[in-house]
Image 1 (cartoon, rainbow, N blue to C red):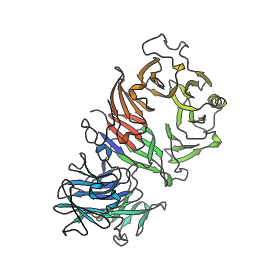
Image 2: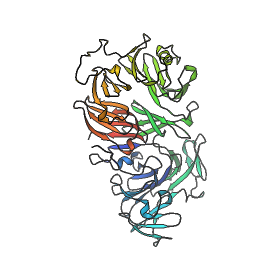
Image 3: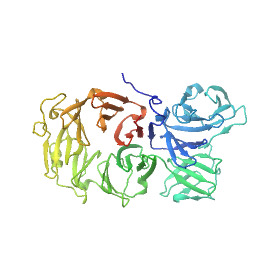
Length: 534
C-alpha cells in the first residue's frame, strides 16, 4: 500500500533531489558558517548565499527534511559545526548543515512555539535559548535541556544576529554609505524607490566586511564596509502561490500575489537565479491574481479575474483587455493560441481575440457557449484545431471555417473497431485535455484516454481517482500525473504505478514542465524543482 511520505524524503533521493522555491515573506534571521550566509525566512525555509561567489545556492526547505518552512531564528554554532533552526513547528539541527535534520519539540522546553524565543546563542560547551523572562541551557550536540535560568550561569555566550525585538534606532549609522536603487533608509525601516516602507527585522555583523540587515518585505540589505555601499537584494518568487509557468529559455512564473504586491518571476533553472517584475513598479500592472499565461512572439498574455494583461517583453510595458473586449466574467484560467487568434475563457464563457489588433473576433465558439449556457472546462490546441471541454463534453473548433463539431468516434477519422481498452469517448464525462507531442490525452471519469487510439491507457484507480491538474510524458514511456494530492509516475507500457509522492510540499499541484532532467511543479507551497534521473 502506498501511503503519505513525510519528513525527510526517503533515502532513494539525494539531499537536493527536491528543491523548493517560494515567496520569501519576511526575512527573520541571519547567520553564517565557513561557506554560506544563512537567511531564515517566513515562507521559503533557509536561503543560502555563497560567501565567495556571492550567488544564492539551493535553499534548505522541507525538501531537505525540515519540518518547519517558516524560520524564526537561524544560528550556526562554530564550536560544534551544527546549524540550528528555530521554526514554527520545531527546533531543528543538522550536522551536515544541509540534510538529516533532527527535531526538538517545544513542549520539552515548556514552550508553546518558536515565537517565544527571542535569541539563540552558544558558549564553548552549551547552546542557549532566550525568551522574555528565561534562559534555556541545552546540550550543544543533541539539544537535551540541561536547565532553565533567570540569567545564564556562564558569561561567555556568543549570541547570533540582533533580532527585531533588540534592534535600536542608533545601532547603525547609514550616513556614510551610498544606497543603491534609490532606496531611503530611516532609523526603523527602509523605503524602496516607489515609497513602499518595510521594517528592519534583523541585523548581522560579520567579520569579513559584509554585514546584513533583513526586512519585513523579503528584501535583504547587503552592507559593504569596504566600499561603503548598501545594496537591496531579493531572492525568490514575487507571487505567493505560483499558478502558471512559461518555458522560454527562462521560466516565466506568475500567480497569486499578497496584500501589497504581485509579481512575475524570470527564473533561470540552471543557475537558480531570479529576476522579478513587480506590480508596484508599473502603472498598468496591478497586484491582482494571475491564473493563466501564454507566450506569443514578444508578448505574454496573462489571465486575471475578468480581464487579460498583455506584457510586451521588448518594450517592457503592460496593457489590459477587459469588458470592452468581451472578456468573460470570472477567473481567466484558460488561454490558447491558434491561427492568429487568442482564446480566453473562464467558467462563464469564452472569447476569441485577434492577436495583433487585440480586437474581439466575431466567433462561433463564443456564441455556441453562450447560447447553450455551457460551462468551460478546458481549451487545448492540437494539430491546427482547438478542442474545448464544455460541460464535460469535448467539442472540436476550426476557427478558419468558424465551425464547431462534437467529437464523434464513428466519423471514420479513426479506426474504431473494438480493441482492448478501447472506449467511446463521446459517452464519457471529460474534465481535462492535454496536447503532448503528437498525442492528445483526455481525462475521463474512467481514466486517461489516448485520443487517436481511442484507448484507455491509465485507469483512474492508478491515481486514486484524484483530480488531475497536469500531465507530462517523458521518453514515451513515463507518464507524470500531477493531482490535488501529489505526483504519480506511471509506466505507460505496463500500466503500472511506479511511484506516488505525497510530500507536504506537493499539495495542490497546478502545472508542470519537463526541462532537461528536471520536472518543475507549481504548487500551493511554491515552485518545486525535481531531479528525477536517479
